[in-house]
Structure formats: C-alpha cells, structure tokens
Image (cartoon, rainbow, N blue to C red; front, side):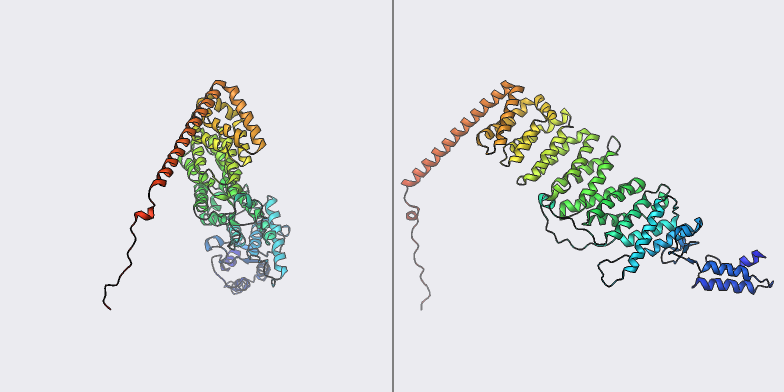
Amino acid sequence: MIKQILRKLPRKSQKSDSLDSAGNDSDNHASNSDDGVQCTNFGNKISSRLRVVKRVSSAVFPASIMAGVEAVEPNLSFNNVSNPQKPNLFISKLNLCCEACNSSDPDKGTAEQDLKRRTLIELVDFVSSGSAKFNEAAIAAMCKMCAINLFRVFPPKYRSNTASGEADDEEPMFDPAWSNLQLVYDLFLQFIGYSSLDAKVAKKYIDQPFILRLLDLFESEDPRERDCLKTILHRIYGKFTVHRPFVRKAVSNIIYTFVFETERHNGIAELLEIFGSIISGFAVPLKEEHKMFLCRVLIPLHKPKSVGVYHQQLTYCVVQFIDKDPKLANSVITGLLKYWPVTNSQKELMFISESEEILEMISMTEFQKIMVPLFRRIACCLNSFHYQVAERAHMLCNNEHVLNLIKHNRQIIFPLIFPALERNSRNHWHQTVLNLTKNTRKMLSEIDDELTLACERKLEEENSQSNEASEKRKLTWERLELAAGFEPAAANLVPPLKPATCSVAC
C-alpha cells in the first residue's frame, strides 16, 4: 500500500513551478488512486514539511549539482535544525549572502545589510566550530558567494607614481565596505583551511579563472584586504597542488607587467611574501623552472623606482634561492650591478645591504667570479658624497665574513678600494666618513702592510703620471692658442660676398 502511494508521488527529477502545488498534486494523486486508499494524514505530513523546505533554484547551481539538494529557510538557526538539514541550511544562508552590499549607496536601507552581516557571522561560527561538512553543492555555493562579494573592479588610481622613499609616507586607503568584506574573507579562509575539505571536488570550483580573479584583488589599496588575500592564496597553493604551476606563472605575468610596463601595483610585497615561504619549500637540486623564475622575475624587480616598498620581501626571496643553490649568487650579484642606481641614494643603500647579505652566504669560488666588478662599484660607493652611502659601504667592508673574503683576495681587492680611501681622506666633507676611512686604511695596513704601501706608491705614481699628462695637455692648448693669435683673422681669409643683381631686364 505504501509503495503504491510513494510511486504516485512526484520524482525529484521532475520540474515544478511551485513546491506547494507539487505537494497538492501528490495529495490529489494519492486520493484518486484506483484502490481508493485515503492517505490524508500522510499528505498533511508532506504539506507541513514543504512549508519549511524549498528546493534550490537551478539558477544557483547546475542541474547536476542541484539534483536532490534542498535549502532550508535561511532565517533558521543551526541549533534549531537537525544534523541532516544543516548542510542545506548552510547553502541557504550562503545564497542569502550572495547579494553584494553597496555601502556607498545612501538610499539603501541598513536592514538587509544587518541581516547579511548577522548571517555571515553565523556562517563563520558554524565553520569554525568544526561540525560543518562540505558536499559539492556547499563548495559550489561557497565559491559563488565569495565571487559575488569579493570580485570587483577597482577605480582608477589617481596617485602619482612616487619614488620608494615617498611611497612609504603615503597613508593607506581603507575600503569603507571592509566590515562585510572581512567576514567573507574570514569565512573563505576557514573554508580553504578546513581539514575535511575534499580538494578533488573543490578544485572544480576554485579553478584557474577563480584564481586569476583572486590575484586581481591584490590591486586593492586596503592593506587589510591584501593581507587576507596573502593568507588565502598561500593556503590555496598548499592545498591544491594541481594549481601550483599556474599560480607561479600567473604571478610571474603580474610582475612582468609591473616591471616592464606600468610600475604600478599595490600587492607586490604580499606576493613576494607568499613566494618567500614557497621558495623555502623547493626541493634540492632546484628545477630549471625555479632558476628561471629567479633570473627573469625576481632580479628585474630591482629595477622599478618603488623597490623600497617590497625590497625586504624581495631580499628574503633572493637569499632563499642562494641558500638552496649557492652557485646562483653569481647571477644575483651580476643582476644587482646591472640595475645599480646612479642618482637614487636611498635605493643605493638597499642594494648595498642586499649585497652584504649575499656576500655572507657566498662561497669563495663564486665570490672570485664577481669580486672585480663588485668592488669597483663598492669603491664608487666609498667615494659617494651622500654620507649615508659612504658610511654603509665602509660598514660592508668591515663585515667579518666580507673581511675574510677580502683577506684571501687582497692582491686584487686592495688596489681597487685603496684609491677610493685615499680620495676620501683628502676630499670628503663629512667627519664620520673621514673617521671610517681612517679606520679602514688602518685595518688594511694590519692585514698586509707591504701591499698597502705598494698600493700607496702605485697611486702616487698614477697621480704623478696624471699630473704630467695634465701639464702636457695644458701646454698643448697654450701653443695652439698662441699659434692662432699670429694667423690673420678668419674674416679676412674669406672674400666678401658680392651683392646679388637682377639679370632680368626691367
């Protein structure tokens, strides 16, 4: 008898315009059956259930996902429904939050925003409690809700492109809708980090287009949003191994555009911070792909004027690469010398500091390959009229590890830096630099006094030869001027021009 009644009820695959009408139709079929069985009580139970439960629309999920999925009234609390209904209530609440809040619209009432905020808080508490179970429909609903609320186009940037020193002084801009955005980010972050989340199912919705839109959000001027994105992207990279090559390629493209086209991006520091932890997890020996990332992506990042905004994170990434493969130090130093600033003293200070960190890790073999061009540049820094640059260069030379490298290669390095020290002692204007120069010369004498005296004699000979050449040039110019004085004036050598005459008869 019950089988006959259930056979006459509408199946889940059938589409109905109204759930209530579906319940009424099932009652009518049951009451008009051939065997004449009255099932009024059973029909009342179905009707009372349909007043609470509503089927999810096919506009929210594809038909393959929505089959059999029911959404509970979203205003209900998780404590007021049974455990089997909690996933459906979770989806209903996500659907309720799919309307993005526009905090800049003064005409919009706050009632819906308050309801949405309370719902988001309830969702965050439910996921953080650890009792949530994410089926495919819940994963799809979560990604849909995050996409609607987070993915947006930012207004054009109106700030001028500033140098690295000025960029740090600008006050950050905060998004007025952050109160709601923060809840969405917190919910998505807990969702990504959930231990029972099936990555094989979730990767269908957290796909490459989704990741690209997520990367676009790093253009946000709100540092709080970029910090949340940093954590989320790092967890996506760790959880979805299939997306790792794509994430690296997408970030590389962002950096290419920044370095070679726009020199404008707000999230370079956060992206590099993510890659700092990623690089530390690279297996040894490094793949060729990772070495190309260093040479083509990280080293050119030293070029932009705004390098000061992200230089700390950039240095960490570079040091991680050298720690994995010390032979890469040669390529990094060569790249630094290529992009070494000439007129930007603050940027020059950063380059000296980074060079010092690299020299502390470099092997003797790699150091000998680059020591000549490197210490030619350091000698220029020792002579800099910007006292901070000169002071920082002296500190580098006094570094214990660098000093050890200098000792073992003093026959080549002493002749490179000694002339700079001599010029400083005679011409530099700053007293601190003069004192550092004196101490450095004393240190070199203690290392090898004979070599220091030989460098001093050689410098005196070069100065003497330079003075003689200068005197010869001076005498040559004087003879030329004297010879030019006895020649007739140039104007007398040129015959005067005849006045033009008209050959046409008037």
